[in-house]
Structures are given as structure tokens and as C-alpha cells.
Amino acid sequence: MGKVNPLLYPISLLILITLGMDYYKQHNFLIF
Image (cartoon, rainbow, N blue to C red; front, side, top):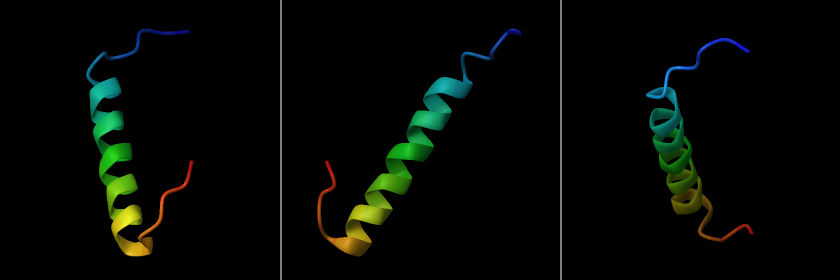
């Protein structure tokens, strides 16, 4: 494996969180 930029982790986490919140707001139910 090559070197991975540590900045990619928080950025990807933020993207996943924002997408998850948008999905939750649209559908109004929790998926566990």
C-alpha cells in the first residue's frame, strides 16, 4: 500500500455524515 493522505479521512467522514443527514432528512426514518 502506498502513502495515504491523512486529510482524506476527515474529509471522507464529513462527506459521509453530510450525505447521511441529507438522506435522513429526506426519508425521515433511521436505518440501523
